[in-house]
Length: 568
Image 1 (cartoon, rainbow, N blue to C red):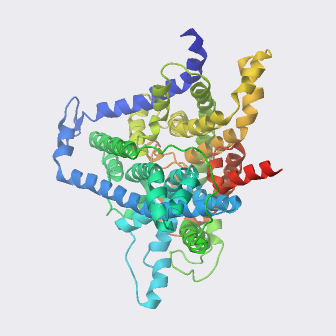
Image 2: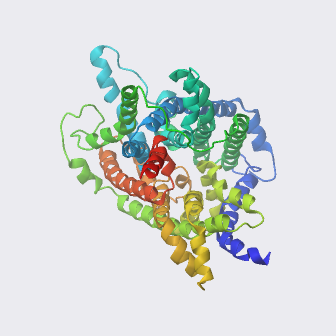
Image 3: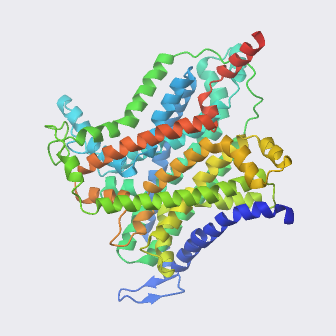
């Protein structure tokens, strides 16, 4: 036990935070689900009446069904778009163009979810871009806005990177010798794909599907804004129950959503075990020359348009001369930028978002780096459960944790203060920091740290001089990513603000519910510019740290380098 003391001390701050805030909030939420509110305001504790109301009510099961259907449709659509996209990017020969493609796919992930949702409202609305193109040819107007279809289109756009990333990783691990062997045996391109590529990349496809399904069933802002009250899912029901002051029913709905996420995790985990993991022996032969490059280029161009179109429409609409969404804008004006800076509460909301995001990022970086070092550099007992506990906030829907935090902070008399917002935001960004830093530490040369200690350096000094320079790009990238996740958070934060508080994303969410003028487009444009700059910085830093090197290396490149070395 004594020789593992350092490892446990490094992990202690994260464990204390998660036990005191995350676990405490979820247990409080569970306890509150066994209350019942009567119409006269009486609060009855220690009762299963609210659970019985939920489980025996047909309306609640309809909402559960709608949540599952929305998740399944979104997952299938994301797979249909995401797999060919990942495959096409994998076939791009020059790594720099593959890297540009990945940047385009991932960059919008760092833009505000409210902004992206607003972009789709401009596209799918009655007077939006789509109908302006369909009506002249007699195919419109079509009604997509405030229907499930509009929510699915927007969710696929938002969650596409989560599908592309694991599939691209699986494709990057393929040994092209397998495909060549199948070709030598007479298999055509399609048969090689069906018999070799698809089975070997199925784990990545299942992993992407797991992420997309979990995130889509817990999504709140997009169904709320694009569903128009006609797409009722568990996340929106929780919000409605809180507004109707039926907290026990909201608690039950939160745990129903959590149970749904856990069941989905189990099902996808079972599918992963069924498919298994193919043993890879490394790249042993150069891959066959790519064919049909033009067709894949056309597909990538279509996907790039799909990814970037909402952002482009927002920028154009921000200069519209009219106060309603119509396409094309009848004239151009910069008045909405001037109107933006006249909005009451916008400055305070921005400052609060910055304050919370900066504080949460600093706290998450300090304790997240410490626990990552504990997990990678120390082989102490309980390492597996510790890692699972640190990453557990990624399993719980943010809507459920947001409402749990709402009740928990009230009980601790921390509701309405900045401290409560900081610790809850730290909980949700901590896993991202741990994942990125852990990946960087696994690639770092630990012998340098050991050599520094042998030369008399104290452990902290050895880490600072030997390990820190190796992982510095990943640390900066993790910090930027944590900052953006915290700054853009809506689903959880909407429950944690007092009436006199607002963060910028929640201010945008409320503004979009009340108004339709291009003021929001002007604000979104400014945020898009800032987010793309941050995305470019993160991409460069991650490339330098080597965390995602497998994503930007084609199968042919390692072999080519070996050949160059042998011929030199």
